Image (cartoon, rainbow, N blue to C red):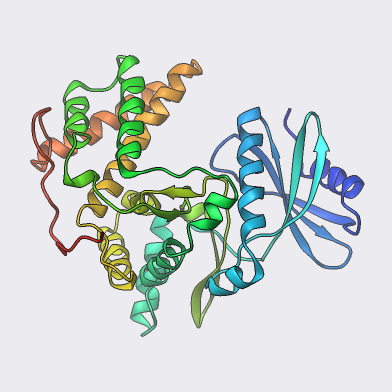
Length: 337
């Protein structure tokens, strides 16, 4: 069932004491997993409301609730950005509707963020790429105990590699992954130094859509990070994958380099390669989803994108054979232990 902003406002009004909605507006979600709205109440406060459309989406919101509960006031105070607080949970249609605090701001796509970053530098201010990198670094040095105590997932580097192999096998089973790209990814996922890294607390769904910015003529800053349903202990490269869809590679490179400088130990030398791999591999994951849900148009689009990736790798000389070893990108060679 799809819920309109007004329906979500009515659910909040009936189920959360002290919130009396006077207005509602839709919020765009990157996935079709949730119905979302921003609710304005009679006291001038604003709230974000999310309702799951499917059981697995409901589980995501429950997981997010657990991690947000784990963020103590002292832990929140250490973060350079705000983190939502769950203000209410309303049972509805066999699931739960979640109500969160909301900080006003704007959301931009990754290329717009790069443009804003260039503007900040041109005006003699800290680049947005550096701000993003520092925020990710702050998250990655959070204590892993908050993940363990909330009973959220924790993966070793080898478990992550094997999970990706399993996902690649699912994609290959569709018969639609280009053969040379499949061999390339098999080579990337072979055992080796690329998959030897220290797992850290990661956001897991970091992306432009989860960064809320305040942009004025005098500054651009991140005021809130949302979308905490996939927090876990895992590969720090995952939180950089979204940056590799940016057309301005200098923006991405700067973010990775500032992150390296901010971390107490230099990240492993293959972090950028894994992040780029995750960005490419997301298309294969999407292909699997489209085939399993019989979305023929989506599958056709996914295959076209995979062919583009294969062509780009071939033209750049980066396309690996199944027996090849991924080369090391240029950059610091130190590796954290």
